[in-house]
Image (tube, rainbow, N blue to C red; front, top):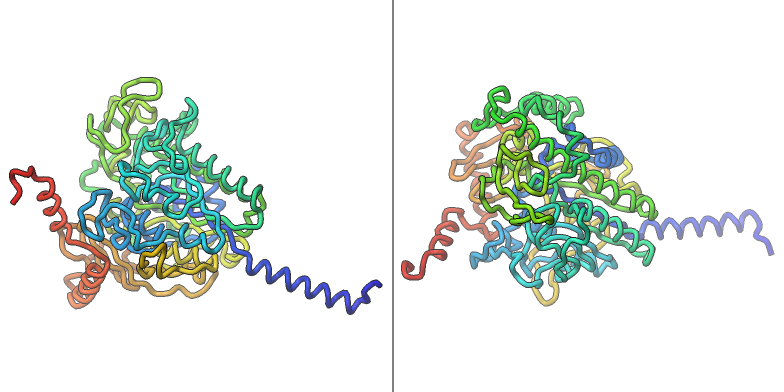
Length: 550
């Protein structure tokens, strides 16, 4: 018998309520995209001139943070992002050396749980593409992605390397070689990530996935493809001074930075552009770097297209960030930096180091873009990768989740965020729990907080955040930042008035310096931090010939 109007509305209302409850309880997909050695101002949504339309679209449809922080170095950042702990708590207080100390094993701790390990009990398929760099590349696979909660993996275990023939290339638990002559690592990562998404949605359309996409771009070496190199060949011939000025003005116009902060001085070791030598080579270095960023954005586009084509775009939380500020490292001529090969795929000799006689970009070179351009990458901030001043630790951060983050789209948000918050944000989105134990091991309490309430339009919450790397130290307490460049003394800045760290207030406010320095000491003790000078001495003793040891 047909339903009358009242009965029909009752049934329809119940069905709609059930559908709404199902939608509310459905777990979102989560995609975390990490760039490598990307400066604060490199991408268009943060003031850059590099062509990044996919990140621009992501920013227009999502929320950007003005103040998001990393740890100033590659592998400590990855440890903090993956675990929601400070890197020393996760066993990677420095790099991949094992110093026999809890905070410095150079191997991801079993008393930490990864985002993938925490999401799997909540029903997530977990996938990763790209740079792992939280275990020694010479070790066995005990701490590779599949042993830390991921179902699928394609990428490199090593921290840096050739883009045309990357060392330590691995699929799941099997080391592999490149599969074609025209191989380019950034393209391979984007293609594989998009394939993972499509395959998952086709095979199990009702289940959520977590994808960790860790590009190596634009980390050295300067390896790019010719179409993008040609695109930027003439762009940087006006030099780094003009570039910093242009980027800073765009940042002011878009409301990213306060014009009252000003911009830091050019690095003292870098000449004015008109006095620079080898200008054609210098401009080419930045052109290749820009080409690497451009190509990364194209491959982010492949991931975003795969989400849209598979019907997953609306209910996927995408987060984009960088592992540290721009890298000022100059590679010595005839040196042997990480990830180098002696020969190209075609058997040519690889010329290692920054050699002005060799234009960078091809696989027969292995160069970096250097201090002058890193200074521009980090506009308007001080210093670079390695250091805890704003240029070393400030990262772009973009979050998009169409189904939930509907307020203030395309705008900046003043919440202060940190890598340790990524774990908490993922678990909050997924409705998953952070475990007290995992596979019989006690898990340290998480350090981060979910950013979702603030990203959704809520009031920003106050933070206390801490840093240490190679003796460089910092603590952030509300609008105050205490920071030190090893082996120097503490500097104090009011970040709301002086985020470019140009007006040191330490001598005027000794009581605040003492109080905040004391908090840093307490944190360092509980977070397994060892004084840098002491750690260096331990290494000297360990590496001393046996006959000379006590």
